[in-house]
Length: 242
Image 1: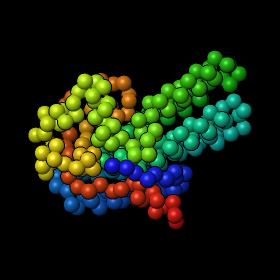
Image 2 (image 1 turned 180 degrees about the vertical axis):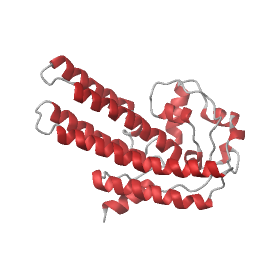
Image 3 (image 1 turned 90 degrees about the vertical axis):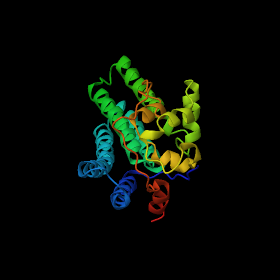
């Protein structure tokens, strides 16, 4: 599974987030929910993804503008802004599952909020503080590395490699939890795109985001909906050429 990604800047990135939200809302007509609260929750999460992108871009944009005349903080703020654009591009174009994308965007938001606080508190005349914030930016980039280093994003093969490194077999894991997922066939018989689009759960996102958090191997409280997900990469290409 591969993606042909394009780099969208601020305004066009906002357009992509809006298109994904609208398509996911339309897709709900084809989905079966166990209850009305579950349907409302799903729509709310779709909206939350859109609003999260708007909020993150607003925050890093304000940070860049605020320190544009600060010789020390201006380049750091510019790096935070451009790196965040990259991470959001990657999340919207490669993470087609709405639930996983939401958790990924939440992680980006948490990192951005932490960096903004550090930038606000930093004394630009204090070399130690400047180095510390620079280190935080570096760690931010490393934390999102799994979503930023490959144009194809995190696919089923990459995820399997990460699990194997932890002495966990992905196929065996999914067979164990097969009964908790609404797959139309045995997991091993699904195509890679179907596997990636329909797996959700916080323990998966913790693994692929290299957060260092030991994943709780449980899918309790999570539900997988089998429906074709919007192709963020294809939508991004359309936006880039208009």
